[in-house]
Length: 96
Image (cartoon, rainbow, N blue to C red; front, top):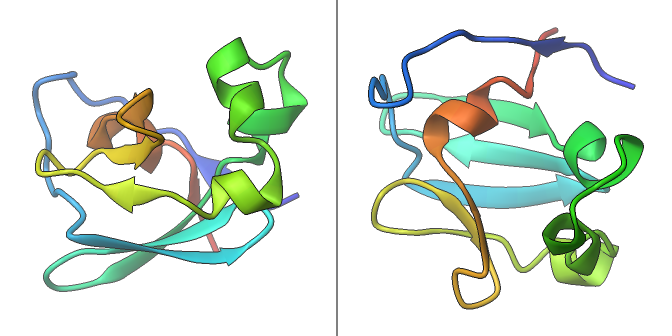
């Protein structure tokens, strides 16, 4: 399991918004920003902890790969049935 970095940001304070997301493998995603790329690992959210039913619906690799970025910079699955704001997703950043 990759190490993650917990950022403590105010919910309204969004430093950067991703403009694209790329599926890498399993629960790893690459977030594309205007000036950089970051990798996040959402294994804990979708599998490790007892996941909420929304996460369980998208935990299979086939459904997890349907991730996209909405106009607010949130990761979304389904018809916005499940979305994660940019502050939330950065706490799962993989540190090298």
